[in-house]
Image (cartoon, rainbow, N blue to C red):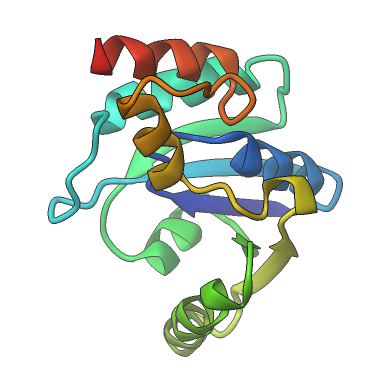
Length: 158
């Protein structure tokens, strides 16, 4: 069985993330969405809230599971029996950071492959930060986020 980890802070999980996930599901037998617990990062939602919201989005897909983790991504991959890491690229601006992360992960775990999927053009502008900013000022977010997550973020800013 080919298992891949789709890691991120996912604060919040956007339709762009969902697009990458759906495409990754065609490549791997099982995807684990790894919600990163990053104490230095100021998140709108707790790790538990993010896991719960994303789990609701993917509940129909029995080949996807959502859990939070901390520590090194490659250690999480090893413990989950994953052969690959899924990463989305929106634009050239993502490339430099992602290349650095790939290089570090490859050095730490040469047997764990990184698979880069380009963002669909309709989501190439979308980030969690943009979605939060639009929501903070009462803008339309229903086409940016899964509906349950859009509702949760509206409640946070109410």
